[in-house]
Image (cartoon, rainbow over all chains, first blue to last red; front, side):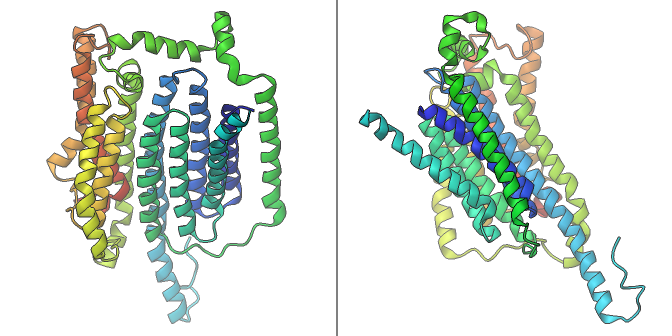
Length: 113
Length: 332
């Protein structure tokens, strides 16, 4: 087993660990981290493949540099999607909870749709 | 034989670390631990890139993957309520995917070892008709290097041979930023209700102030150096842009930098100038030269340097806004 084969296996393992996390986790932030790990595994396989030749294949390196920047753009956008959802929901929930606690009218305590 | 094993030890340590970090980044008990583990994961991966002979990637990963993504996650975590105590998944739900992973890894390993996949390059050299293009691609890059105008193959690929990718990547950054801007109006009502900035960090402590005053100039110098050296050595527009963005993020978190207001024409120009200049060059080469993004060999060096300088500026500002862009940055 050469070190390149080990890094190929490692990349595949990280990809699959990320996939596992994506399947079993519920917290959106942890799932986002899991997607990022899948990306890191993919990059690792690409960089290892680039290493087959000496000097290393610059095309794959350039693709991974591009991939890193695209990954952080996607992460930033995904985080904003997560937080935007929470920000709009939280005040409504708070109002509803308040209405539920300080009034006895059952209509006002109806859950938000 | 023993020498080979000694060579192999760092790889094994890195592999062990990276697996632990990856597991911890998802399954650590508290969310903050998980994020810290993810930052550590990025740093270990940067070491692996260096080990695999990819210093460009090591630089980019350390700055972007570990640094900026970490800030991004921690910044977002402040706005998200504490993790709800969710129902623990049953053991079967947890184990079953793990079994799948083990099976998939075994399949991958059997393929890897049986086909001798990593020796493909040698086979392709012997028999060009195999049709695996990766090694010949690498050879073609090295053959075309004298015409590229730069001395470093990765920079040549990024800004000359595959300049399309880089142009589209700048557009992806712009797209992500406009996506961020689109999403903010929904929180505007919440903003008005809470009366004041939506997110207010803790007061910066004195050590942070002192360190960021000390670090920011260093980061700017390093960014300039990476940009300049990028023509002939590992480095380039993305690494430099990420370092400058890191400097801006540190200063902004310490409260030493005013908001980058979207309404300011300078900020908008700085965000767009990289992609605009790139497209202008592309259009000029289409009309007067050999074709879309085919630089004339004599001027290639200066064109690439010009594009890189302005792309660095755009990347730095866009990444800064992506990471810490708040209401007053994006909508005032």
